[in-house]
Figure (cartoon, rainbow, N blue to C red):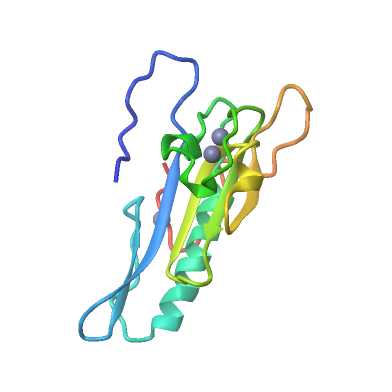
Length: 155
Ligand SMILES: [Zn+2]
Ligand SMILES: [Zn+2]
Ligand SMILES: [Zn+2]
């Protein structure tokens, strides 16, 4: 997974993305992996508990993240595959969306995307928004000081 932050000449910084995934093993146990290399619970056969942990962990990242108004759309980075068939021109306020497909049930993805992509993305819920100079709305995110449970190290 590309987590590097390349220097971009444009004013926008690359949108961030976190993926929390429950991975099954051949002995019917499972483990949780976070793309931010957070400390995760031990491998376990209690897959339901691991799923609950993964969901809470993704929510903790959502709370801890300060959405950056100059982030580029992470959806576009992935060729807008989250809303295939609907093309949009990215723009507007940067939102933080949490995607979780209940049919798959094992992957939670948190990403900074633009407000035009966000409503089109499947299984996505807006969990944060950048402070916008245009609308002067206060940010939803509680700020940098907030520490999520299980001490993930958000980027
Ligand atoms: Zn994490
Ligand atoms: Zn898109
Ligand atoms: Zn977009």
